[in-house]
Image (spheres, rainbow, N blue to C red):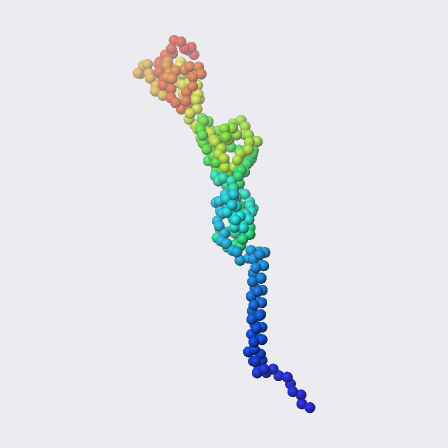
Amino acid sequence: MKIEKNQFKWTEIVPFLRSKLFLYTLIRIGILLIILWILHSFILNFYTNHGQRLKLAKYIGVSINNAIKHAEPRGYEIIITDSVHVIGRSGGIILSQLPKPGSYVKRGRKIYVSITRYKADEILSEVLPILYGKKYEHKRIELENNFELKSKIIGFEYDPGPIGHIISVKYRGQTLVDDKHQESNVLISKGDTLEFILSQQKGGEVEIPNLRCKTMDEVKFLLIASNLELGNISKMLETLNPNEGIVVNQFPEYQSGKMINMKEAINITISDEFPIDCDEQ
């Protein structure tokens, strides 16, 4: 007995593909796919705001309050992640943002920002380096680099040491450092200014020495010891050797307690004899 094998014949399926039943089936499948796609998009949009992408504004340089007012109606949430003190800038100003300005983001996105701090960082005066007697230019750089403190010279005072060295330091009118002490418990705001008085080798005062009745060797010794100069020498006798004369007069005149600036000159008049009111020795 001969068994015929079942074979697929294209001639049998062509009529089905041309039938209205097949056409209606395709239409129904297409409509179903469209409905599923619409539902899928709607559900994603409802739960995740999918598809509503907006260009993110630049908030850098804007105050945090104004940035929030701008962001909230657009569905953004601004979150502060850090605050940094910036010298010369008021607090609450946005320094950085993530995502970056110009990025396209969906509604409801969180915007992470860092802002300037409202109150400056503070340090105790005890952490400052030793300042008294140190060279101003070196300490100015150290204070700026390590402590974010500015420096300002407000005056000079005579000091026998090197010029340009620190004599005293003030902060908001209070003396922090001088030759006697250095304050340790004063709070100093970063970005503020310390005021300095520096040393100089002129401008100091000494008492006018009494040169009358002194020999020239004694005069030179006293002037050197007082950091003063010898001015004009007037002679009572033209033939008198200046190195052998006796002082009979001086200008400025000696007066107990009267002061003169260092490095200034004293003029003298000399004779070959001691004045009568001098005690010869």
